[in-house]
Image 1 (tube, rainbow, N blue to C red):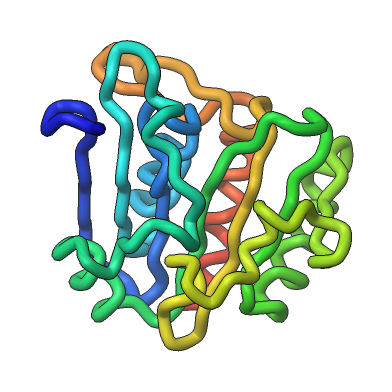
Image 2 (tube, rainbow, N blue to C red):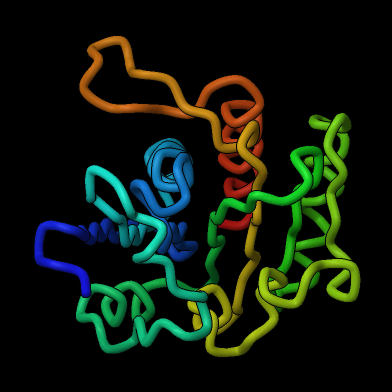
Length: 193
C-alpha cells in the first residue's frame, strides 16, 4: 500500500488539450518530465500522478484503464476542463519502437506522420492490432479517452524518455531524442488549440 509521501499529484489548468503522466516520477521515468516540458511550452493543461519513493516505484504502477482516476478530485477538475488529451507512458519492450494508441484515430495518424519524419530511426507503430493489447490505449475507461474528443496515448522506449538535469540542477528535462519528440509535441499541439 502506498503511503502519503509515496505519491504526488499535480494539476495545472490551461488550454483545452491536456497532457497526462499517470505513471510519473519513478514509475515510468521521464514521462513526467516530458509532460511538464510540453505543457509548459504549449499552453496545454497538465495532470501528473507520480511515484516518489527512493526505490520500488514500479509497485505503484496500475494499468490506465484500471485506475479509478475519476474518483481523484484533481482528475475530476482536469477532465471537466479539457476537450482532448495526450497521455505519455514508458515501455520496456523494443527500444526502437514507439507505440501510439488511443481512441482519437485522426490525432494518432496525424502525429505519427510528423514523428516518423523527424525521428525515422524509430518504428512508430499505430495500428491497434499491431500494438500489444495492454498498451494500446483503446479502453474507453483509460484517462486519455475520457475527455469529450478522447485522445492519444504514447508508449515510449527509454531513449524517447531520456532526461538531463536543468542548468540550475534542481529538476530534470527531456534530452536527446526525448527533447526532439517534446518539441514535436509542442508544435503539434499548437495546431490543435
